[in-house]
Length: 554
Image (cartoon, rainbow, N blue to C red):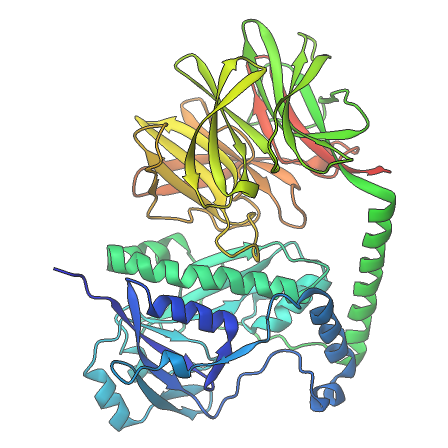
């Protein structure tokens, strides 16, 4: 028997929507898991962007409007962030209806006659794209609640101003939530929370990244409910427990003209300083090494020394291993003349000194993060190959210098820092995955797949995906290891900047249906004044290696 699709109601504030909303609704409506049943239009509330190009907007706050308009021109031409689309093509006379909501203060509901008509049809989820609260009788309609979204940085729920402050005050992250409102929880329960690293150069690009995440998260959760039912939604609620008391926080407004002048000036100074730094310096990664008995849960950077490297390149993503009594460090190597990474191996002696180095794997696309697996006494490597939209597996035919392609574990995927762990007779594949066409990047969502075999393309998506949605702990940072009969996953803290610090997370639950972890240790770069960032951690019985970031004069 064919499974029925979820039936959706959509609340809009006019007969037009932003393009990202339209594209998402169109994809949902043509999917196998959901279809739009009702479109409710609140005519008394017109949707408006936080900046306008009309005369009225400039007269109200010319500095703010001009600043954000310039930001959009410089950074948002390709995003289509303010492009609006008519919803007419989403309304089908065969199975969709268009109803009008009425408004009482900040609450909206349906005309009693329309309500009685709609109540005869099953609605599974209402997507509320307005900023209004729904009356109880309307909340009672959907089986799985009415969903709305908000940016909650600074503890407020009025979205766009908070993105403005997150960007121009250079906050470490911007946090957003999707809530499900029901009669039992009229203020909503969080079913998805994510944090992003703001783009400090652009309000527009940061807002587009948030929209990109929302456009992926909402369909993904609808499909999860379609596949797994109510337990899936309850699991989302339990996984995204509130950070503070439930309810609406105090709204935050855009700055007035005088305040906006200060932010515009601050933004200008920051942009100029970035240009000057780019002209005078290059991003530089180095390898730091420590010879001592490993202490992964107490590692600091105080005792590490820099590995000597040529001045025309940087080394990052170190993976260290010992083979036949010799020590090797595999790295991403980038020559400043090419800016395209390849994989190199560094031969070190027992004191951690460089003996030789050699390029071992290069493609026409960028390679990094040379993750190593020793399986059946044979070394395998999974380098990052996001530029080719693949996850590629290589086999050593003459360790450590000769490698040959085996197979693609996945294709047509954009992933970062694939890390595989064998546990309880299964292979667990961790990676950051971009499904937003580059708008949101690969710093804040960790996905998990599993398989009984390593050499396969049949990887099962974990039902809790994404298992981590936090820019401060999602992205992998090295080999998952066991220590004291416990499992630990190194991860990157990318809040404030890419590759700021390293977390050691203890994995407390890892099954086909559950995943949980908690940060138990952090490796901070400020313990070594010569670096300002670090993002990879690996060790053997003899050596521990990390990488360090700084700016190097051209």
